[in-house]
Amino acid sequence: MAYHHGDLRRALLQGALELLAEGGPAHLTLRGAARRAGVSVAAPYRHFADKRELLAAVAEEGFLALQRACDEALAEAGHDVVARFWRHGMAYVGYAVGNPAHYRVMFGPEIPDKRLYEDLNKAARAAFDSLRDTLQRCAGAGLFPAEQIDMRAMRAWGLVHGLASLFIDGQLNFDEEVDREGFLARVGSVLALEAAILEK
Image (cartoon, rainbow, N blue to C red):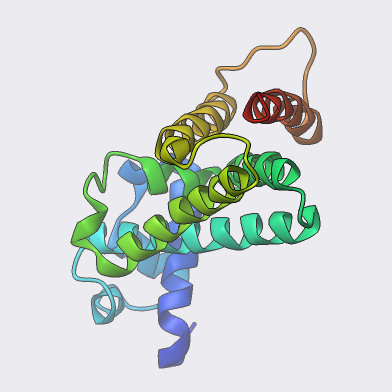
């Protein structure tokens, strides 16, 4: 299958995601992504110098999609600052649960320093700054002092990241099988409790 120039990068990213979903980063090669995209083994080098650059592009795509999911959740939350906080967290976990291949690359050890990739670093920073903005609104509403924003952002990130990672890695064991919606409902309960702490 032949791709026009403008489609090649997208096709390679899709091929990479398929391989990542099947076997993780160790299963991904540029040659394999090219085969999945239906192009020559030399074609990936038009966009990516090596496997790590391809992984960085996958991670960047993931952060951009995560931000879109969070923005949609915030838009639905309206102006209630506490509701915005817990809906933001639920959107984060929901994205991770629905896109584990992306999520594992976004936070995996394959790219320990995102600053080496400008676009990836920009996307990752924007996602974290969005969380800080959510907490900035809470501080502006008088729920806690502004100097606590960074500490609370790290705590909130640790909470949602931990819940997401435990679930997609199969480490959360419930008495009964819990589907995605059921899990997210439980996440919402945890985040609602955390949000209540903001008001104290």
